Amino acid sequence: MRFRHALALSAALVGCGSSGDDAKKPAGFAEKDRTAEATRLLKGPDWYRHAVFYEVYVRSFQDSDGDGIGDIPGLTSRLDELEALGVNAIWLMPIMPTPFADSGYDVSDYQDINPDYGTLSDFDTLLKEAHDRGMRVIIDLVLNHTSDQHAWFVESKKDKTNPKADWYVWSDTDSDPNISCGPANPIFGTNPWTFVPERNQYYYHRFYAGQPDLNYRNPEVVDATLNVARFWLDRGVDGFRCDVIGLLVESATGCDMEPETVDYIKKLRKVLKEYPDRAMVAESSNFDSSASYLGNGSDMFHMAFDFAYGYFWGVLFGGTSAAPIQERFQKVQDTYPAGGQDALVIGSHDVLRAYDMANGIESRWRRAALIQMTMPGTPFVYYGEELALRQGKDFVVDSRDRQRTPMLWDDSAGYGFTTGTPWLAFGADADATNLAVEQADANSNYAYYKTLLEMRRGREAFGTGSLEFLSSGSDSLLAYERAGKDESYWVVLSMDESAELSANIEKKLDRAPKLLFGDGTLTKSGDVTLPEAGAAVFRVR
Image (cartoon, rainbow, N blue to C red):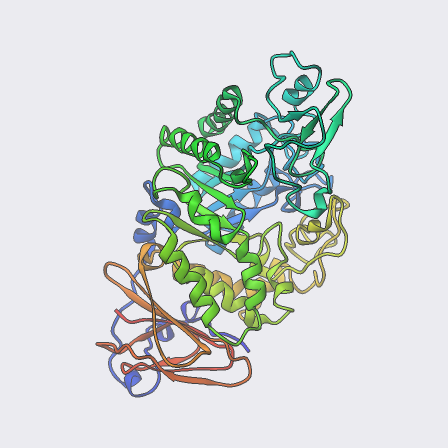
């Protein structure tokens, strides 16, 4: 089925109310230009609460020099396309020098740019061009470990007496009673200890052997990594996404968010407070622990990025009950501290693309995107999700490369990504899912995403408004209200993919609602009708 893009149509349609008796009444809620309000919301220390982030894998985004590898000048050349989509902020996956054992998450120099991607000067240009468009830029900060080719580790492994001998976690045996943690994932091997003949010792690594863990019980390591953050903040980045940061310190009884790790995060937050209007988002290890990354709401992370979202959506695509979705988001409301912000993620570089999680069923990932844009929190859109990019089949580093395939811009030989041979093969159905093709189709996934972002733009209720789930007696209806200072919206979604849904929402309205997005009807008395797998947003105040 197709959703009607209410905001993208004529002013006459945008001004219409619901169908039924209420539609005969004069339409209220006159729409206004949201530009000034959007500009206001995206300024100041709370800008991230109202932004839509776009995750970019630079290597796969845009090649500017024909070598088949995406780069920073290429990304800079595509900022207009991101601005047109409605993106307010960009998250860059690792851009620092790396031997590429883990796609850049093995950093060999914290204060430079991967030469495959460009130079520090290129990065400065990107920051300026993005900021000139009102777009923020945050970067991946990988602090749990370095590459085994980092100068710190090269020195540390020489002997047991050098100045950096204690900068990593060393043991005389391939075990340590004070560390209870094995590899973070089977793809990283079975033994987290690797022998170094020069020291006649083993070093610890939660990930690949080429990613030795730093020793955060050493104050010198703490100071050095905080200075890494200052280096990039001084250059003008707007913040960080901190990779696996809950794993900084291990103990005999735990591996995640140990007291020393919490102390470090608080120090990092203090560093950010030295710079105006910066924000950082944590990659939490699981949903149940994500609230702990937010501290009291103002002393640790601004947002928590939870990989459980990827698996959460994967389970729910195809589900017929709205209850699991409601329970999951209600738990966020019940456990997150005041001031803490959810980071709303569907697909990412580490989980399947939305198309594949949804088994190719369009209405499923579209409803997920609508939830992502209207639930409390900050949306993070993985590059290409707006085109419904497909998984690839090939990989260079590991199987996760299948969701990291090059971006598709047009239908040319290199799909606008490169004039050379791409570093990784394109994903499936590239002829049908490139930007140029989708821009020409009013019913495309790109049109759907663009309209969603336009709907969210300048509406304070979606960024910081309250959340109330609405009762209807229908297990297939997900219904909730987002209420801001001056406006309120009802979001309704049907989990029934086989038949039209009709239900009555127990809460009543004072005036006729106005259809803002999607397909469906809603009356003042709460009667709602949605097509199969339908969804809609109504303004109700």
